[in-house]
Image (cartoon, rainbow, N blue to C red; front, side, top):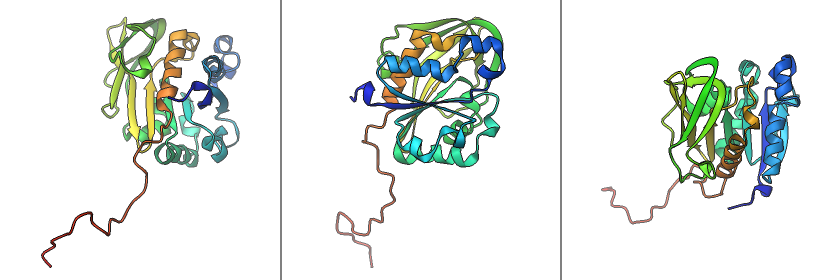
Length: 249
């Protein structure tokens, strides 16, 4: 496995809540993406920041070509993401194998919906209740070093039904104090790329300062990095068969 220091992670964030709301700015003074970038740098990753209001949303061809894994946090401005940028990200995931980690309310992002082919709709409630994320696939690399569960004392609730395709692998299921459960750590493969959805991360709570949450995102970046062993994305005219054909002609 490649070391984290060779994995280039671009952290994309709307970066709107942190600039508009004083109480959120106190939690994430430089943005949620900067908090996560600092944590990933400590784990040995090379990081870059990108935001909605940057030119081309910070996701130029050059940036994406030099990104192994892209993290995506969006909430209030999904509709402002330009469709041509969504197409660009989609192509880098499916055709080039760039990994994608979709965080929290990114379930309604254009790129997640395009890759999933579903609405991403769910049940939600913001009451500051406890969440317990149970590891249900202990041997999975994304759960490495986590133990039985992650407990978040205060968070926003997401509950089933979550309108997503059946995950290829399910790593975490969340239980909430109000009684709901949620598929909170889901893996898919799309073309050459790997996609991981990770539920925690509501902006009004210091969730991205949690070391276990940071560990999961680092683990996911290692898992999502393209290993070069996917089926080539080419269409082949197999004019010459491997065996002699009896076509009846």
